[in-house]
Image 1 (cartoon, rainbow, N blue to C red):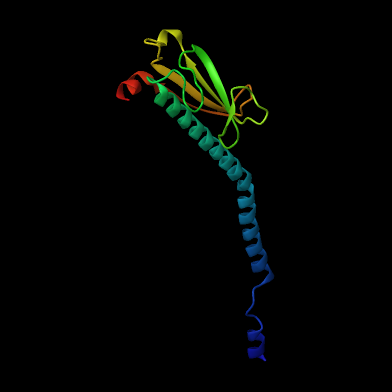
Image 2 (spheres, rainbow, N blue to C red):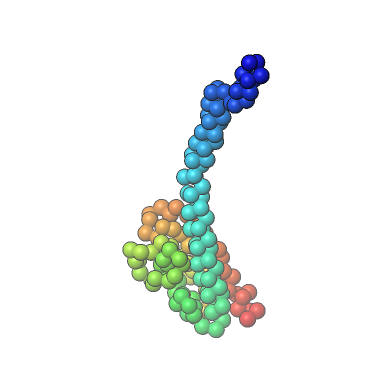
Length: 155
């Protein structure tokens, strides 16, 4: 009889099962709590990647047109106009145009000062890409300076 009773006691007790379920539930809750943060960081990373791609394309377009013409090839940036100009882009970084569009996600802004324009070419152009495009306070921004004098001399 003793041998039969010992054979029936090989399973887990209710306390052991409850503790194991509690540990698993704690782990699952921790993962679920981190999910919104991870999704938010993923969205921010995607936004910044597209903005940097737009910034790079715009800066390259401005730099490659200096010395040859006063209008950039792809985006139509006038290198003769003093002041600030802008272009709007959709969520994938495609050009929408110079005027604000409701579907615009990114706004590229460049600026040139009057004292910066010897020989008809500004030595430096400040370029920024902001998102969201139509917000007063942007959620994000990337920027660069394009040095046209040195670039024009090497082309």
